[in-house]
Amino acid sequence: MVNQTFHVLSNTLEPCPVWVPGELFIGGIGVALGYWQDEERTRTSFIVHPGTGDRLYRTGDLGRYLPDGNIEFLGREDFQIKLHGYRVELGEIETALTRHPRVQTAVVVAKGKAHERRLVAYFVPRQINTPPAEAELRAFLESELPRYMVPSSFVLLTALPLSANGKVDRGALPDQSTQKQVPSASACDERIVRLVKSILKIEDIVLEADLLSLGATSIDIIRVLNQVQREFGFRPDIRVFYDDPSIAALARLVTAHLGAKEAGPRLLPDSPAVELEVLLDPDEREAFKQQRLGLRPNSPHASSVSLPAVEMDHDSIARFLGRRSYRHFAKECISQKSFAGMLRWLGPVWIDGAEKYLYPSAGGLYAVQTYLHLKSGAVEGLASGAYYYHPVNHSLICLTPGAEIDARLHEPQVNRPIFEQASFSIFLVARLRAIAPLYGDFSPRFATLEAGHMGQVLMSFAPANKIALCPIGDMEFAPLRAMFDLDEDHVLVYLFVGGHMDTAAAQDATAQMTAVNTMKENRGREEWEL
Image 1 (spheres, rainbow, N blue to C red):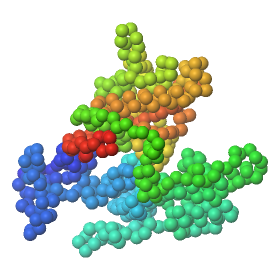
Image 2: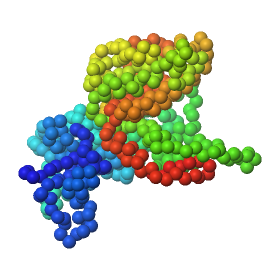
Image 3: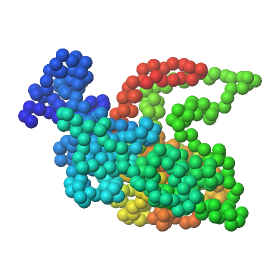
Image 4: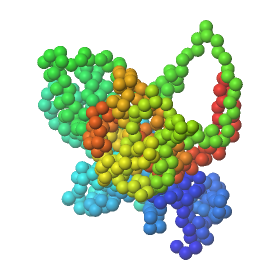
């Protein structure tokens, strides 16, 4: 439109980079003076940009720039939600779903309480007699979106319900369809089905149903396994369960355990269920956190000495704010200089002929090695594949060009979506033969300590190079051993996934940093008010 401007801005009113969602604003001579006789709405929606001085209208819509300069509409900001710690734009999911050639229109809603939310997609097919199957839609979205943005359920409609003004009436959407109950094959199967019903609060469930397709969240899965532990004295390995997350497969695992238990005393004695209980209720989890059991309680018989206050300057606070775990990464290529700037500090410097590192190692052996996997386009000038970082030569040695990592090796609910967004992975691997001759059985413990120090170095220097890292607790590493050409004595100790720092996240950290305004002393320690 002539004399009109369109902007995609962050929450700090900075232009968003390509692919990064933001809020849509309109400027130019076509912007109205305000809402008729509604000063409050006018103040909220009509602003003056603090940098340019332009008068802008806040549309309440979300969008993002595409590489060709066009703006992709992603839906209303009202439909932006938090799902298991992730920020999700429902409009982005709807847009991706309507790109499927057999889907005419779609609406995505979040159902359930905040900590039990599930995404449900309602769609109208182009041909009502030949609609796409749920598995087809799920596979399509998994190729377009991170795993956490793929709806748990898909509901077929002949038409979307509309309000009087022609907009989709989300409140009139029907409850998600469920499958018809069929008889269970055994008493164990029936108990498992009843157990799942009570936890998911879904009445009609078939034995062959996939728990994830039914909308089960990671918390629901833990609840199910906890209940299995209580009822059967057996807790299936969660990684084995995710290989086939159906009720039937869960029943087979329980049945196999019960059969083996009857056959003989080969299994270890069952642990009390209480040892494996996990707090699920958000209030209970927060209450447990607030107990701060990691701090030793004060003893009435011990004296306490308050240490002198240490002044923390602006740069110190900036390090605290930059040192964090990131779950979102920008779709940008990392420069080789930045990547080298992060890795360099794992290597030594020579001072007066002596080799010195930034982190300690038992006996100065430095037995923990650094391996990396780069996706295509991750780092400028580097091909995808598996690498070894040589800390003394400060070089990357390509071990398997073009190698890929199957996302299914990661835990599916939390870690897999983070890996799918990331552009590289870092593996800290201990070579036991490089430490065991000196420390014997203590070697794994000392290697773990060394890897922890290395991780601290990486997370301290990554933000300054615009690199975001996320520590990952575990993954199925065995299939990757050949890729990195590892021997039997190589043991994975610690791993990270990472990518280019998301501009919005960096801006949020900067905004926090500039908001630091007061320092106070409280019980002998300094606190910053943000």
